Length: 194
Image (tube, rainbow, N blue to C red; front, side):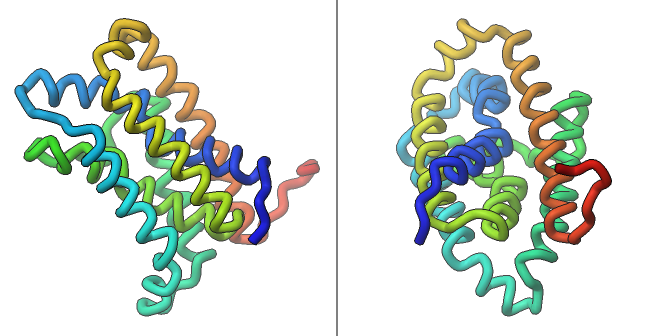
């Protein structure tokens, strides 16, 4: 067990970008406008439980299917790449299911703890210590909780344009992360990479 501030920061940034709570605020506001009651504590705890389960037992679960973490990380890099393209280009590649009960679905799953977040948890586990990912995850879930409690405040501060700018910025960061995950887990070394 090795605590590393740089690993915590890197894992935090990756998870923050993939969870994309700033980008989810307009969706959450839309769900609230339809009369759905959102319970921030419950949504956050369910999201955390899902992501913790994959952090702690994701690798053994993959082992049942004969998949190693590096292979999963490569597959994850493709999903992260596609999510980044969604954010940068403003297109929808992954369809959101019809909104149901707002307490858990669709906010806790799949909006916060969706395929991208789960894949990212397993992918970065190939590069970072579990304890550092856990700390980064807890910090992210604290931010998710605060964001869920203050969605209307964020809407006023950022405005629609501000939310869109954040999505583009985090999209480019995610694109870079996807490429790095792919290169690291395939062993490809780029010329001039220093």
